Image 1 (tube, rainbow, N blue to C red):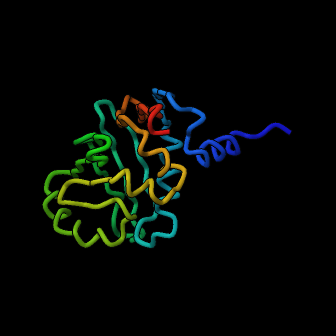
Image 2: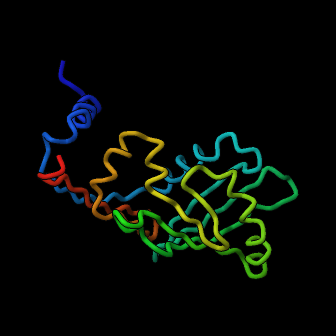
Image 3: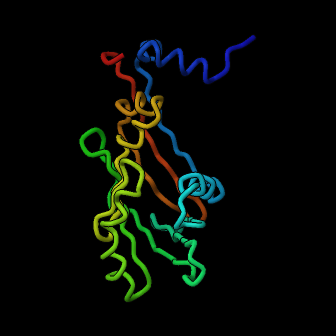
Amino acid sequence: MAPNVSDILNDLQRGGLRDIAGAHVFAHVPVSPALINRLAAQAIDGHRAVKRVEIHPRPGDRFDVIVTLAWALVPPLTIAVAVDRQPEFPSSPTLVLRWSFAAGLDAIAAQFTGSLNDRLPPGVRLEGDRVLIDIRALAARHPPLAQALPHIVSLGLRTTDDRAVVDVEWRVDDRSA
């Protein structure tokens, strides 16, 4: 029986990636709204206050995020989110997003963001009107990603009319493997 991709990847990781020393990979990965929303649904699964999250990519590195809360009297909230700063590897692997509500709600919402930090996953925190996503901390929760992270040269999140796009450059130096 031929080994599957997972077996090969596990074997490469166990060997410290020595068998692919010198590899240099560039990937341009368009991600559909359907996949983004499946991931969002998984992320909020079991969260009592948030009933649903819909994410719609917009041109110019922006997203519209529609949050439906569990409270019946609160209408769905539309949040505009823009990429504010891309992660820089290895020095600052943090993606920074800036969010805003309709006029007048920003100041009120910003007052509550600090109290939400203890409910967010490790590696995600709110600072005023910014969401900071620490790629290193998120990857630490998934060992294969944590092992691949030191080899990331660059990673960026972009958007088009109907897709989020992840661009990544990954390298296994001859010396590090």
